[in-house]
Image 1 (cartoon, helix red, strand yellow):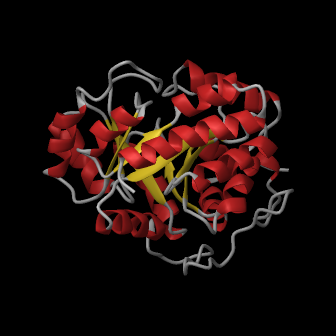
Image 2: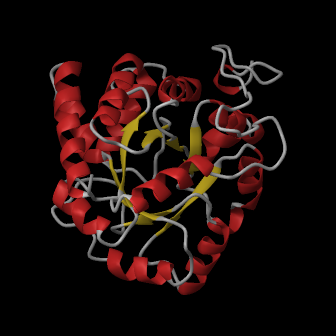
Length: 297
């Protein structure tokens, strides 16, 4: 048995299999339209005069069954795309709230396949983006990983510890499945670095709104305007702000600059503090709904 229960020949022990997609993506071979479902979402939001909202939740947190209910509540509350984190034991980009959720998921035995099944359960409602560390992708097998992503409705994968100058092999493999490898750009990045990122990026560019790890902050985005201006001069791809955005007002400020906003730690903190899954769905849906209103729509 290969990593995460994958059987030889491309199926998992739980039945995740590369297949022909209903949106026209052939994930079994051949170049496809990379990140096409993401482009559709951003184009529609732009036409409607609003920003894309992308809530984040660690896949399988607080349990796989409860997580699928949370995803449904996010979508009901107005999410355009859902980002799912693949639990990992050493998440260097994540702050303490997200780290704790990943440890809880791992303690329950949540695997990459479990996260893919969560996306697959809701794939007809919205595209998904995964956040997966590079060792997860390599252990699973890049070809198999991206094919199974596409089969599960995952249109893009953020690999936070993958440097842009080492990304070409994974970008090429992902492109064959029609999946975008999402690159991050941070405020300290040099102009040369941003040129490199802009030249390789697909789907959208993840703009790190504050230097550091994920997590809620009283203030966020002071470094974002300059970063966005530097990127706008180099790419026409959508720019999505994340890291340190935890309130509707912070999202509104980021949305004045960017095409989309990711909100994660605040949602996970609400889940962790909720006595029941019903309470978690209600409180997180309230934040998603308020953030949706702040971003238009």
